[in-house]
Length: 332
Image 1: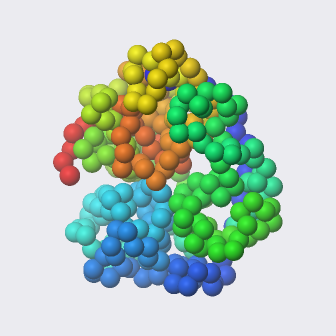
Image 2: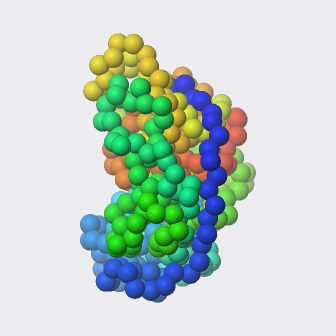
Image 3: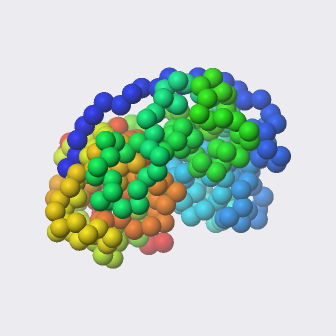
């Protein structure tokens, strides 16, 4: 299905500092950094809340990923919260207890929201004018880059573009030297080396375990589809490829792809397999990133395991050739 290709990526310097208060009314840095645990009655899953922004950032830093940080207590954030509570011997029944909140707050240091000075590399590009909707239209592009500095910055800090914009009204994301408010998720210590990966096809999660069998990280995942389900049993990691190409094989007959000949889509974060490809020991299957982080665990894949680009990179940093990856059918 895919033919990965490695290419060096440009390193970007990060300048972080405590952020000053006062941005958007009710959802600024001060409100988020000072937010207490949500009330017993959790916010509606479509409602943006300062306490949920902080909660998602704390979960991300603890390696219990909520996926894209958007300030809403959606299914992915709730799955991360339940997993964090369980591994810490705490109960979670659709309420964030003081024990859970305190344990999360103690798991990492630093403000949830900090300022970042946009660097020349952030705005240099090149950027795509528009990401084509069809795969055939992607094959002629020299690279599948971001469509704007705002998209690149949102992904860099694990945020939705909508939340990034809301926290920075009037800011110019395409201007080097501009300071913006961002989630403080960079520089977090990586989890220990991964001894085993478990993909739960029912819960739509990927979990990693250390050599002692301890759960060390949980990520929301898109796992297969009715059209092309993921495999069962245990596979092994055979290779890790950064900046992979995507090789379309017409024998899979994906919906919306009319080509009867194979073609290659070049690397980039908006490549169909995102920024990293973890190849597995069954032909055509892997764990990879995505150009659309907001849809992780909310859409179908072509049989593979799809994570946000940043979560896929975290998993890739911990696995090695031979790491077992088991596929299980859990219960919700």
